[in-house]
Image (cartoon, rainbow, N blue to C red; front, side, top):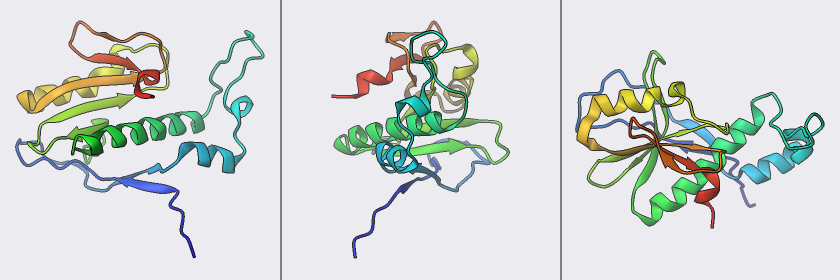
Length: 170
């Protein structure tokens, strides 16, 4: 009998090179295939987007599309990380005051920190945990970025990269 995994764990990042403490160690789970999950839920484009008001697609209220979007970005980053012999993890403090969606860690334990935002714009609030992490681990942070639904890639004045999810694809 064949078994299909619908959820895939994203292990917690527990660094050994710096002094971050009080980190949660439980994995979080992402959908292994967000397109399959959407199909199984019967969530087609009209269920996730609403174009009735403006004639242009607009994200409906709710969390499903955000979860599917983060799962898709995680899947893409895992493919690229595997090719680079890196791992993809997440960071969350035990008290929940800081969380970074994805941490891509190289063999030398230096990292890329990634926030995933289902939004066409990136605000200061969207980068606060990335800035906190940069302050905590210094040079062990190779770069930090927000992957979002906008159309332009740029670097913010605080140094955080902002990258459209569309640039992750083939």
